[in-house]
Amino acid sequence: MKLVIASDIHGSKYYCEKLLQQYEKEKADRLILLGDLLYHGPRNDLPLEYNPKAVIELLNTYKNEILCVRGNCEAEVDQMVLLFPVLADYSMMMENGRLFFFTHGHLYNKENLPPVQKGDFLIHGHTHIIANEEVEGIRYINPGSVSIPKGGNPNSYLAYEDGLFIWKEMDGTEISRYSMFDADKKEEKESLESSFLQLVDIIATLRSENGCPWDKEQTHKSLETCMIEEAYELVEGIEIFEKTKDKENLVEELGDVLLQVLLHSQIGKEEGEFNIQHVIKRLSKKMIHRHPHVFGDKKAENPEEALSNWEELKQKEKKKTKTPLQEIPTSFPALIRGQKVWKKSGKIYEDGKTEEEYIQLIKDSIQNCNTSEWSKEEKEEFLTNMLIAIINLGNFWSSNCEHLLSMAINEKIEEKEGNK
Image (cartoon, rainbow, N blue to C red; front, side, top):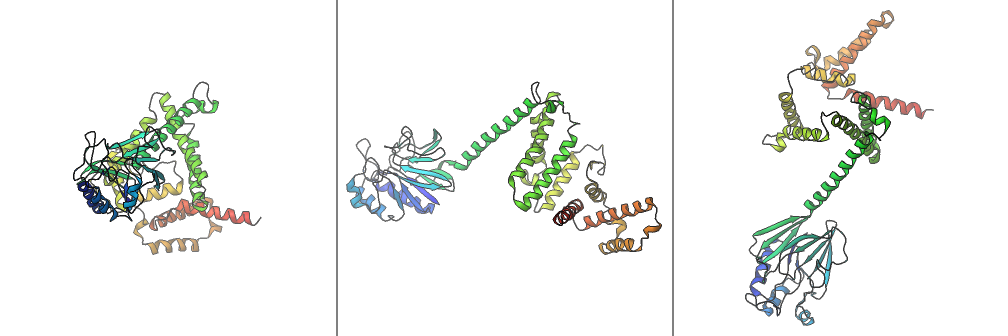
């Protein structure tokens, strides 16, 4: 919903016309008036083209689009001539999960807050001064005055849409802006920083003199198996989540992997080698550098082009101490490692065979084998050739052989368990 919010017209025909012109240009859904519509008040000078009767006529034209609250200059006689309600002390509206509390400001203001919750918005005029500040967790917003600005402010109104407030002069020139989502991000960032630092302190305590005997004894080497196990448990957690949407299990498994990262970082800090800041900075730098299609001027129209950018930059970054095949970790499961080796070496299609020839090769090998006459070494050689052939075919079809075999084993286990 788009709103135009304005206050303190004080009977100025000239500025009332300006406001309604901007309301039309903004193509807003509602015009929110925060009181003091018709009279200049004894403390104010007469505004430009002071003509309350003309203002009445102008505003009544928009009677079905105006939401109005009572200012300290409004009287019961005003309701007799205005065709929309003007005597309510406040009005409220829910927007983007927040309460907007509209009032004039002489009753409720930042010195006398209404009964609202932290994160809600108090929006009022009365002071004739533009404002945007936080008071006891409440966001105080003031659009300034349409016709009699004070404090060096220009004549102004406020436009609001989808969480964004924009203060504007009466010709539509922007003065300033504020996004409620920027505030949410700031609060979220502060909460995230606090939670992360607390977790880092917990890990440091576990490794301290009076900490946990197990945690204190760990080294980079001793934690190798833990990381492998936690990574596999996370993969299983992802599979479970895909089937059951069990987010709690997935969150726990992600936390266990993060624990390993923090333990290694704490050990690095204790040994004077590196700490978690080094890890984060290195990762941030790498993510920015390897995504030139996001943070730079390079283009990537699809995932394949994005991956190509990544691999190209990765090769430029790496020191030429290893060949592309040597860069594939030997600790990978054999099927995963095999598929990566064949992709890297360009031997996806063994001996230049087509997909159909590949399938026929596997069929013929199985059909023509006579295992009764084979030695153990010959049987193992046959299995090896078949596994390599399957890896090649998996690459041919862009299939993850490790995943497929793992899922097939799970299904067999479920079948056997179900038959008990």
